[in-house]
Length: 384
Image 1 (cartoon, rainbow, N blue to C red):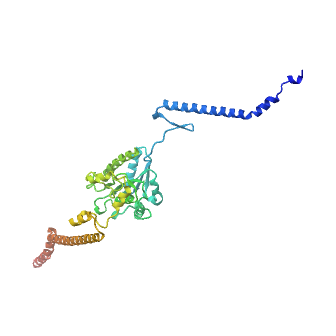
Image 2 (image 1 turned 60 degrees about the horizontal axis):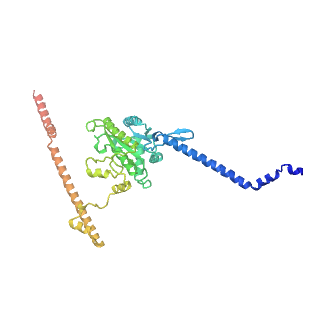
């Protein structure tokens, strides 16, 4: 018996393993893949069970080990109050308004227009989601106060500069409250009206009607300029609360030039108010451009209306336009003549009224009789 046959030969198993190594590697890879898939399925099922067990109202997102609340849509990020004041009234109103806005848990910034550069910073309000409030006073001869002079000058020039265009401030939301005195009727709240108009011309959106405070307690709507501001402030806070919730109340739309829609008086204006947000640029273009020829049918006669409603040749159209222009010129001449006659009549009436004024007659009578009485008195003294 050969003793070498009884000894264990290790070379043959190792050789077989080496020959079949590919199958061994494949088995390990399949096992690891199966283990990974099982772990993924287990984790997914655990997350689904956890989400079902927690109410949706109390669900929080887990990020980096910290609990963070779900993000909410932000409609108003804050309020910026700009003021231009000479005596401090507008500044005081800005402080009062800031306190009211703070109660809504909104950040507030009070900015003096004297320290504000609109050329660098006003464009930022287009995307900031802020609501900008302008409290501006009208000073001597309808001019802005010294602190708001540069801002108003820049805004006026930008509104008529073609380089800025009608959409320069599109996306900016604003409200205006003007301070003035109705005793100066020709300049009453002129600065507030202009700021409101210029912002609108640059494409900004008016969130509510322009407010007007009156220092004349007799003509003030609420008895004083402070009461006027309080009434406007109440409406503004209500509108701001609606904007916070993403709601839109019916207010003076951004396409209104004057900033004070009287929809409660005119039904047609109220119907137009509902479409303020739609076709905003189209409305702005059609309202801002004054047509050279009026499109009203009042300027056309019955024959002209029929001819325009039917198919018209180019030659006939030229004749019709000449006829319309001729009628318009004649109408303007008649109005000028009637205006001259009216002015002459007013002047004559005013002169007549001035000649027969009792106060003037009494003064003239005293001037005539005074020298005569003086001479009689002197003669009497000499003789005595």
